[in-house]
Image 1 (cartoon, rainbow, N blue to C red):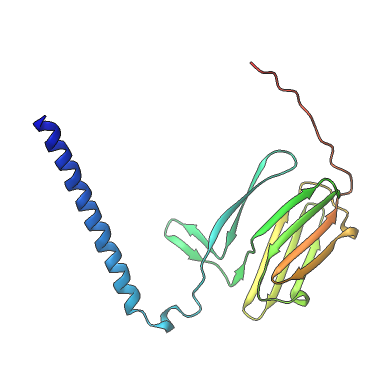
Image 2 (cartoon, rainbow, N blue to C red; image 1 turned 180 degrees about the vertical axis):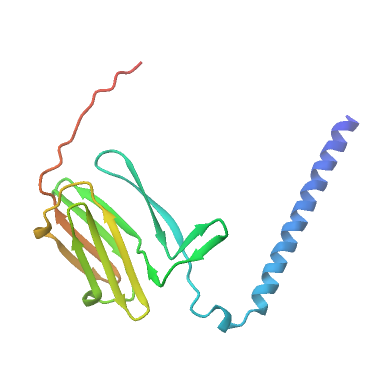
Length: 176
């Protein structure tokens, strides 16, 4: 019984020590932030980085990175002034079309350039310091003559009809 009490006491002492270290680290971070001048961080924000995972029509997941920084062994490294927009792709079987939605605030529809190729779609926009660029891989055949794009409130929506309707495959799975 005494041994269990000492173990519990040791556990709580260890937790107290870890919380004290975390509190000291946060205090150092806040001190550093208070000492910074606005000129030190001007033009440096926002930094963002993420992954987008979608499942293609072939049933395989496709992972795409986005953001204006990239992770390296030395931490996050700022990329060029070109930002990769957050993009969502969706196959609409009812309309037999691929719908691509991209967020690109701060530009006008005249600044947006879209190119449709056989196996990818390129989106580019530039206005002052706002620069966007992305290549979106496509694994279905597109009718590039049918492409229609709209841009409103920072959101680009691109609709492209497929050359051939998607054929849904059914596979019966044996239950064991």
